[in-house]
Amino acid sequence: VGLRAIDVNRNSEGGFSFRVRTDTDAELTEVTLSVPGEHNVRNALAALAVAQELKLDAAAAAEALGNFKGTGRRFDLRGEADGITIIDDYAHHPTEIRATLAAARSRYVDRRIWAVWQPHTYSRTQMLLSEFTRAFHDADFVIVTAIYAAREQDNGFTAAQVVAGMQPANARYIPALDDVRDTLLAELRPGDVLLVLSAGDADQISAQVLSALRSTEEHHG
Image (cartoon, rainbow, N blue to C red):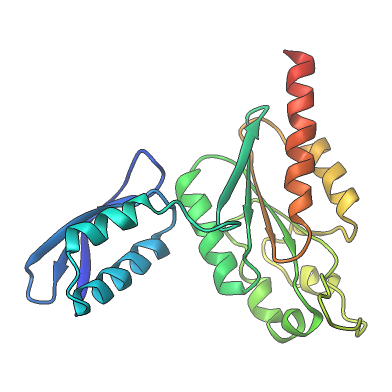
C-alpha cells in the first residue's frame, strides 16, 4: 500500500499533524503525533500501511499512533529547570543521532542545543568514524565522552579521534562523566536544550544536571 502525508504541520505537542492519502489519491485518515521528528511521520506512514494490509481500521490505527508517547530513552524529556530543557536519547548510530538532533532543532528552533554523546563500543565508533563526524551539525555545542566499551576490550582508539574531525568544530572531548556534568553546570544558561545521547551509562548526566539545576532553582526561589 503506497501512502503519503499531505498538509504536514507542527502541532502544539511538538509533533506533526497531517492527512494521509493512498496511491490512488483517496483520503485515508488524519494523524496527530505527539512524538517529535519528521522521521516519525515516515514511521507513522509505514505503520498505517501495515494496518491497511492487515485490513485494520485506519482511524483506529491513527488514534493509536496519536496516543504513542515514545519508547523509553527515545527523545525522553527528563524535565526542565532554571529555563533549561533536558532530554535523554538512546541514539548510538550516526543516522539515529542525526534524526534526534533534527527533531530537537525543529522543535526548539531558536534555542541553543547541546549534544552530549557517549560513543558505544570501540568497533562501532571506529568503523563509522567519518559518519559520526558529520552527524552533529544541528547541535550548537557538542561534548564527546570516553567510549562506553560494553563487552569490548580497549583497543587504543579514543573518541578524541572523532572530535578531531568533527563538525561543528566547537566539539570538545571530555572523557570523564563527572567532568562533563561540571562543564554543563558551568556553561548552560536559561533557554538551552541539553540532549544526552547514550546507549551506555551517560544518562546519569541528565539526572545529575537536572537535580543540580532544581536545587539552584529552589535556592534562588
